[in-house]
Image 1 (cartoon, rainbow, N blue to C red):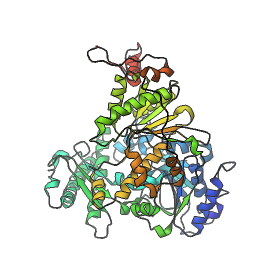
Image 2: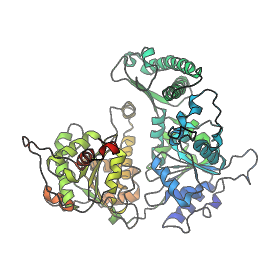
Image 3: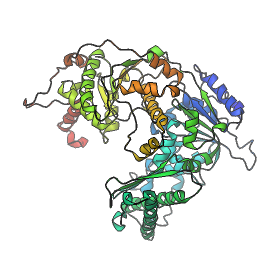
Image 4: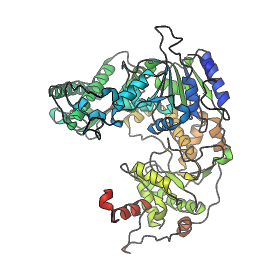
Length: 590
């Protein structure tokens, strides 16, 4: 790596705000012989441009010795972030590669077939005459041969050990704050009738009845792996497979790999990984095998893939704790802080707390938050708003109560199936709709009038019923618990203010959020501490559903029991309108 090139590799015509100083600090960190540089860069820093500058410092073929690696990888867990990179003309020398399911076959009669189900995947010994023009293999060849390749973190991890995407000089990981959690998720093994094709062919034990549940799980995993391998071998003897058989074969192959990895890691005396097992419903039912702090998994899939690393995020809150989670030596890591360039008065936090949103208090607090939201809608009659509901249960209760208040015509909701479609509809709407969202605290760019206000309904603590969370808390890792929640809050607060001249208000409805700010104060970045220190109570109008609808020229129609009428959200009324349209059979909604 040649850190001295970092400024000349900057892809934009000029530097913005703190970018030049940030790059100078990153250069100094690498020149101080650190293997990894953590770049804590808030919204508006232009992280993608910083990433490109760092990648440009990678050793190239012209100057490398024969045994030296060259080039750079860019990877991110967020698909939307990769899409942004792909669309940015300043980053057009990053060659994008995606998974096979994102490409369609080009053979005659197969144009709607994803590459992972194409004849090359279905037919034994199939010799594709157009493989050199296949969109997937073409992109893969280009990405593997060019100095800079970009991909999702999932694809990056899956290609560990690949001859195509081997070790490179520099690896840049964007949105890296959740690296440990993403690794845990990728390394988690979910065993259920839906996910295990040979489920009915094996006896599923009662894991919880064992003195050592993980040991019993490893014995079952070893037995299940053999059953999966045998079933996979039976499929591979066929000359041609159907698309369903291709999917079955690939899933069996994945299971063999996952199960063998778990057994090997669990039984290795040198492995630092602690494993936990869940089987809530007992014998014969689904089993989930999860790693804690999967440092060994990350070494294989990430740290062995490069010589120098830059990890970018606004919310790497504690260097030592982060390094411990992902298996890095903190003495070989340096943290570079980038100043926030957005005026603090443009990103205010408001205390509108209505009580606790813990499980035992939720039914009492949600109606109060719903009344608060009606007042906020009246306070922002012409502006779009966003509610971070934390869970679908909370979202459903809020939507139902708001509809009962008669303001459903301004409310848009989503479920797991229509999540993206409803988000797009909300963003495209010219009305000042309120969107009740679940798990949209990250990777959501609501610049300008897309949203001017948002509500945090609940302190986003992890579920203590999750075995990984419970195990960590048993070990006294309360600082991790609070830090993880704070990280999500900071990410959420960044959704509605996206530029120095942008502005947006964040309203805190759960009193546990104020407690969180105190408990996690030591891990709070200075620029977010500024927001917390300026926390104030707003002057809001009284509860008036009609005033909440002033911006859409509608009449509030509260639901009354026995009235025979049912009020609807905007999402429900849109769905009814599509279904009853004369062309609904053409659209496919009828």
